[in-house]
Image 1 (cartoon, helix red, strand yellow):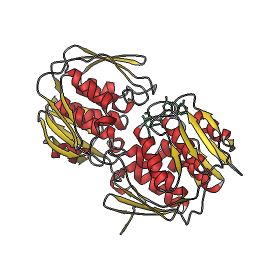
Image 2: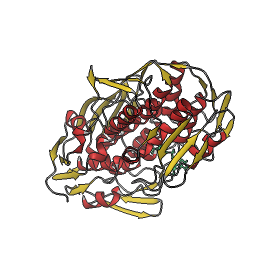
Image 3: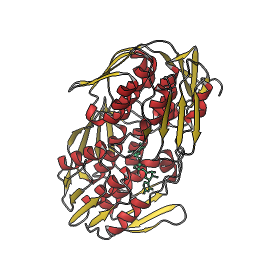
Image 4: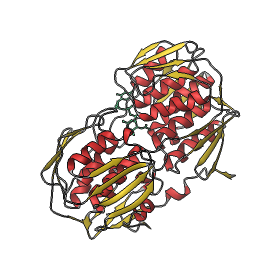
Length: 435
Ligand code: UD1
């Protein structure tokens, strides 16, 4: 069994992706495990005695960061193929340094688990990120309601909880991270916690599935009310991470952008219906079945009705940039409204370099479909914005060079291998100069 690399060696080099547009995407791809399930499941492993075995674990830099955090806390982590094994029995610390928190804002998900396990935790405040401010007030107020004392002055969160006690918590907004953090903390609380207005994302159901496999008693994930009977000792377990719906959405939109026909094995349409509905409306043939999803695009796409991002089951904010890329050459004007994050149109200027015509005003972006896109030197601004540049480049004439792809490596196992397997002319190169 191979030890998990502590250093992010494969990701530290400056690399770019070169795409020569014009090839249609054809063929089949198996969708990777979900990044946004893996991270909370790794935090949940802290609560379990004995070994946790996670199958279908994607090899992503964000997962590397989470593993680095676990190892620093004293856990043993080993990785064989797509199986990650964690043993938290030797946990010795309950703090996460700023350098690791900065690496991945969502590492705040470790707070609830560390608190439940150790009765105390010390983390630097995650602060803002490339998508704008990233408040954690809902995480903190919920943890306080369970009995944690939290001092969040001076950029560090110092948390103490002699004893956590379950109770009813009504979230002011169905935050994914707050729901997960509170589920984890509530596992270590005495009594019953009822989370109302909880997020309903499939990744919350995955967290419930994993924790129940390990001996927890949680019901309701996937609905707005999650009930956790806390205080039960949790043991290790074996669990298979659900397929990544945003990676699946990326390749569906890639096919919508480039044309062709792709079959995404394991993609679950029930988790993607907001995205597939828009793709169908725009003119793609999309068929979901038990084995996966097929997406075919032949003619020119037509602008669908306005796309408004919303918590699940609404249109996912994580698919906004990617779908926008697919609609750059549509007939008519495609209207987007981004309602989750304040700075989530940073990909727009980069897409404009490729000939896209997009007007942004506040939370609204209007894509005026153009006849053609051309290759350009562009830069990833964030994870999904970077994936959007790849999807757009597939349909651009000539070569596009996409720099700062460390953003993409946070969430895609190997976007260039996946797209190349579907027939794209795409490769990763050492970066020579920034655009
Ligand atoms: C998760 C996903 C991310 C996705 C997002 C929304 C992971 C690791 N990341 O992020 O990919 O884009 O859901 O689907 O699963 N908010 C507050 N106070 C809080 C918490 C959140 O105001 O305490 C606000 C945020 O600023 C944002 C909205 O709530 O406007 C949604 O955030 P949230 O659902 O918490 O997203 P994350 O869990 O951070």
